[in-house]
Image (cartoon, rainbow, N blue to C red; front, top):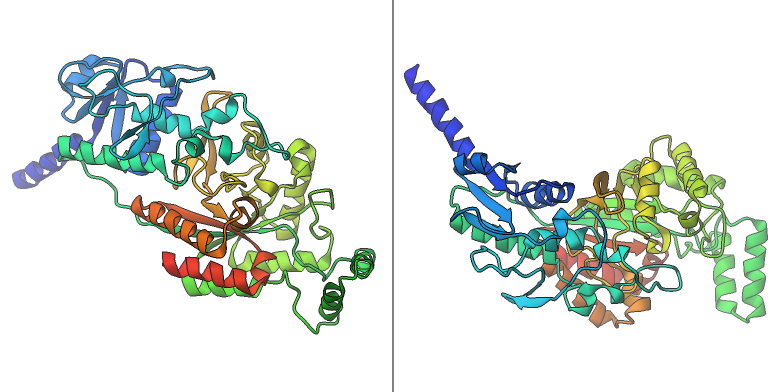
Length: 447
């Protein structure tokens, strides 16, 4: 019996050592948020925050995060950002440290890191710069080329994840007892269904209109293709669903479809939501993969329209809609996410740029949205997009070889930090043989 007690006592003491105590003079919502991201989500380390120097001094495994060290403990210098509760222009002076960009540099040599890693991570993850005055593109989007990540050359690196891993190595060296939770790279395949079919199920008026338009422009090849599809002599060029399903089976892909469920508009040209064929397709997709809403361009400025689209898709699938990704990757902070949360969305996949491939929030891990306008963490989980196929083709104007090289580089970056690689393809793009070949080459490289 005494032996068992000694073993239990030993285990208890061991577990106590494993809890990292972090002292900071003031525990703010920003500090709580980023500590949870870094220690719990990234590293799997149990920790506790304290404002009490007395409690801190009693701890066995401890670090301080403050403007000045307490004594001779492991110390990380603290910038003012996480003690602030407003949004203001920050002084960002990126410098290379161990071959990686860093900012919020420490003036105190005793700091285990020469910069404030928590403020850096918070600034990038919260998308702080997108709340500041900036120039938008013609679709009212924050552009990748306007970001500090693009300007300072780290857009194609998950900088937050890289620095957290480097920090973990320093912590492990200083505190050998610490244990980190191992992770493995993941791949999530996502597809935006802006227009389910090219020619089929469009209704008599749209079909005749399209045919006459082709003939008036002497686009005979397109007119013949349309007629062949309508007579079931040829597969609709946008009907790539069997192919996508085959890939899902071959590579065991975690797959999401995002459905444009909107009436026709200037930038919204999907099928009529009331179409029987469209609804049948949606139910088929929902049997094997996750299906979410692809909020229309029009709904970005119309809360009621967003609500109607989500309600409509929910009615067809007979379930709550909890996944989303905005059409055109429209994202205005914090309004877009606030509207999603108000309509029951739990996980969003919009966080990427249309004009640039890479890591919009400098991470390839999912994380909770922190709303800077309310200074609070929310329940909405963000999944950062790595690349969209149309970004490579239409915006960056890359050749097939250049695009493949870039995607492989991004995959290597994700694997190096054991993150999540998320691709975005459209069903119409995968109707082209050259695109299928490109996509399969990227999957073969990852797996």
